Amino acid sequence: MRDFLLHIDFNIENNLYFSPNSKEDEDYHLFLDGIILNKKQLINSYSKKNIDEVFKSQLSENFSFLDKVYGEFNGFFIDFRKKKVLIFINHQATRKVFYTYQKGVFICANSIHKITTKIEENQLKKTVDVNSLYSLLSVGNVLENNTIVNEIKRLHSCEYIEIDLYKKDISIRSYFDLSSINYDENKTLDTFTDEFNEVFKNAISQEYSYDVDKNKKSFSLLSGGLDSRVNIMMARKLGFTINQTMCFSQKDYFDHSISKKIASDFKIPYLFIPFDSIDFVKDIDKLSKENEFLSNFLGSSHFDYALSQVEKINSYTIIHSGQIGDGILGSFVSSKKVNLPNIERLFNSHQLKHKVKNYLENYSEKYEKEELFLLKNLAFNRTLSGSHISESHNTTLVSPFFHPEVMKLALSIPPKYKFNHRFYFYWINKHLPEATKYIWESTLLPPKNTFTKHFGEQILKRIHKYSWLAINRTDKISMVPYEYYFKKNKSLQMHFNAYFENSIDKLDFNQEIKSDVLRLFNDGNFYEKTMILTVLSSLNTLF
Image 1 (tube, rainbow, N blue to C red):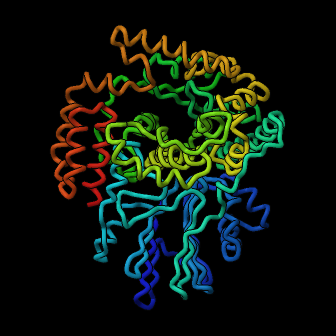
Image 2 (cartoon, one colour):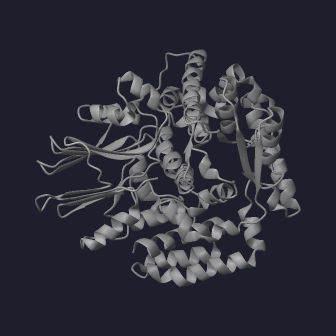
Image 3 (cartoon, rainbow, N blue to C red):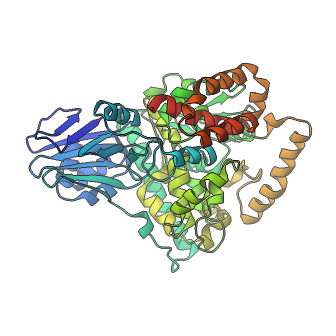
C-alpha cells in the first residue's frame, strides 16, 4: 500500500498540495494504488497502452467508468485544465479514503492518523464521536461512513469525491448505487443459477489470471466453509493451478480436518497454522491501527498471526479467499420475504445496547432491505477488516464475491431463493457438485439441501457444542477458542488489565461512557474486553 495525501486550502491561492507528486503531464495527474484484476480487459477495451492511460482518458469525462473497474484500489485524479479533483475507492471500500473539510480546508488521505496529524498542524477541530465509540462497544465496528472522530468521514462503497477548485465546491457522489438493484421476480431459480455461475467463473478467471500474468504462484485460503472451497474448486475446473493453500484454526477443529481432507483429495499443497495460544492479540495498538480503528482489533488478529507464519508471504501478489460469499448468497436474508433491517443482527454485545439503539435505528431506517444494510455495515465495515491486515504484509486479499457483477447479480436474487441457503446449495449441486462431497463446518453435514442445513445447525452442531461444554472443553467448539485460552493465560490477562488501567483516563471527557466501560471491562467476557481495548487504543493514538 502506497500512502497519499491531498490538502486543499480554499482560503489562499496556489491552494492544492498533493503527495506523491510526480507530475509528468501538464494536463492530468493520476495516483492509482492497488491492483486492477480486469486490467488487461480494460486496456484492450479502450485501446490504450496501459491502465494509467485508461483511467486518465475516462476520468476526464466519465466518472461512472469506475463501476467497470474490478480490484482492490483507491486513488485520485487531477484535471489541471478544468481545475477538478476526483478521489475514488473500489466497490466494497476495502481500500480506505478518509477526509475532513473545515474552515475552507479540505484534507484527504488513506490513513485516519494522517488526517488527525494534519488537523493538529492546521489547528482545526477534532472531537470524539461518542456514538461511534458505543457502536464499537456493542456492534464491534463503526457504521456507514463514520469514524471515531466527528470531523473525519470516509468514503463508503462505490463513492467518490468530486472537487471543483474554481467553484470551491466539494461533492460526495456514487459511481454506482447498490440500492438501485431490485429483486428480479421474473427469473427462475435455474436461470439465476446459470447466470451466476457464468459471472462467478469470470471473476475467478480474472483473479487467477492476474497471478499467471505476473508470473506469480497462487495462494488460496481454505477452511471448512463453503466460500473458500468453491473458489478453489472453480479455479481448478477452469484449468488454473492452486500452488498453495492455507488454513488457520484450532488444531483438529472442523476447519482443520475438512480443509486438510479437501487439499489431500485434490493433491493441493497445504499449510496449516494452528492456534495453541492467543498471545498474538497482545499487540493491541498495531492491530487497531491496521484496522484504522474502525472495528474490533480481535476480528483480524488471527489472520495477521497466520500471515506472519508464512515464509515470504509478500512473494504472493494476492491472497485468494471466499470472503462475504455466505452473506450475499443467503445469510443476510432472514426469511423468504423482503424484510426491513433488524438491528439485532448487528450486536456482538447487548450490555450497552440501550445506549446505541436509537443511533443504529437512525441508519437502518434509511434502508428498504435488510440485505443491503448488512452488506454495507457487517460485510464491508466488519468482515473485510482482513483486507487491511493483508496490506500490512505487502499482499492483497481478494474474493470472487467482491466482483461487481457477482455482487450485483446476487443482490437481484429474491429472498425466496436465497433464504436458508437454498440458492447456494442449488448452485453448487448443479455446477460444482464436488463441493458437496465434504461436510460443511456450519452444519457438520454435506451441503446438499435446506433440510440438511436445518438439521445440522439445530441438532448436530448443538450436540457437538454441548457435549464438549459438559466436560468443560470449550477449546473444541470453535475455530479460535479465545475465551478458553484467555482464562488459562494469566500473562495475557495481566497485559489486558495493564493496558486498561493505563488508558482508562482517556475517557475522562465523558463520565457516562467511562462508567459504562469500567463496568463492562470488569464484568464482560473476552470479546467485550477487546472491544473496550479497541476504543482505548483509538483514543490513545488519535487524541
